[in-house]
Image (cartoon, rainbow, N blue to C red; front, side):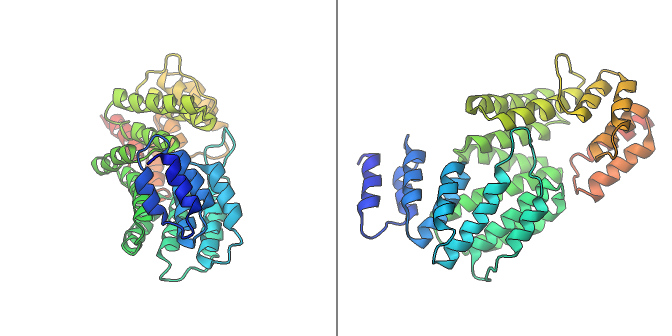
Length: 345
């Protein structure tokens, strides 16, 4: 049976076929994404529309997702209506300006999703709400809070009966575990999830994010491995002409890793803090200090750069404490700790 025949059958059938059944027929086919997009946008049943929004989101099909959100935001079915509202929040968080790396107001999205009345047995909605919390706490650098939501998603996922939804949501859970274990400095576990996600996903934008995090996760172990993941991420971003990803990789991830290894020849950044980091790597300590002391307040990273430039143990200790206490970031807390140990040699 031709793929477009499957689409035709879906559209012409008086009784709408479940999306997970159609997906099994189209899965892995060259036109899977195109055909599934068409079916998602034409679906009318409540269960299908909910699964369709998740499918479009998971595959990075944001223009199509926006169309489906507009179609369902006033749906008579309450589950569809609430699903549509949560995906509107997820869509808003994802659609940023080309040089904007993080959403403006993640706390606003948490408030918006918490205003929705979600019943205890609306497991799909509870998972979506928890995912919004995880994304937003990640944006706010509050990594410790992610663990609690991971646990509740695991429990609620057991009640999701739709095979397609289950697969898509399990992949999203694995993504949050990938990040959570990275920040806990549990790198073997983190990489296990990361490489599994690369195998499972068809979403090229998702692959960029995964390679970006894998690159950072190799910071303390291997320059070559870290830069391999940066180069793969940049190659995908170039193919997609994905300007925001290119900007982030070129101005943050790449110079950060290069400066850590003092391999900065030809490396530049638009970001002042990373310019200071490059100056530190090139032993231009006065330049590094001058840049950072012009800032009104410093992040834990910037405190670490300044502490290294000044060989100031107090700054390094403060940076370490802030990574742990403010961010629950046990991975990057290794930076000031490593610098303190070097000063004690």
